[in-house]
Length: 285
Image (tube, rainbow, N blue to C red; front, side, top):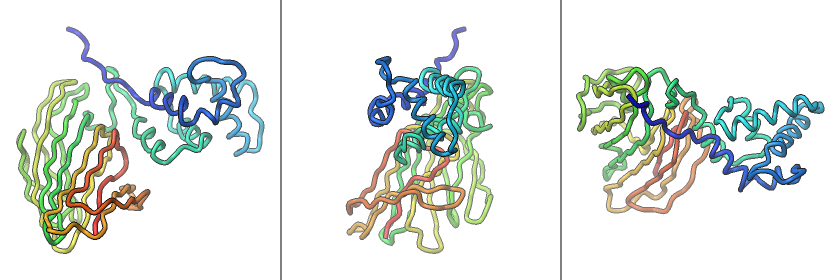
């Protein structure tokens, strides 16, 4: 029996791409002789310079060699720990969008090389949300399709959660359990969708919302690594909202990382390659 095909782990590739292009001017002055597309020693010297500036102490030759090893492992083997990645981000003064994407790729792998981001033992390879907003500016319906890959133990059920006053949900693929109230304005159900170890499958469901007060907002919260995320909001009113904003939030605090105004239209859309520990969506006025 052949081993299941392993998905490519992107963090080393993405970090290399950033260092070879956007952030090359930062490490290039530290390059003593021409090497590969990214000079690991020059990159390590940038990290060392940042450490010296932050700590006020010089970095020894032994410590510089360790930094070189860390850079090499990160770029060539996709092995990087959160503190090291944080050091990269700070030393190169990376943009917020680059930081978000890098940390979204920072996930452990199981014995088969499949990214595993929680004990639920599956990976979300793609997620598509379409939300319909009525003429009063309130979300009324959501349709979702996700592609998931089971981990080493396979997959039996798949949890879905909604934040609303009440909701009716149906599955297009798979069977769904009765909705349970798991918090204030929070509902959870489980979709039965058996998958063998490392098998990939499609999960589709639709939900009808009922809000007791205005709720001009729709978002996808990623508590695990999600790849290929797409969100579309369709406004059914004759005139689109006066203001539409795309938003990034931290789920734990609800604080906004970024808000960006979009052109007035009857449809708002955004897509990102990956999302983790963030809430991406739209609000309107």
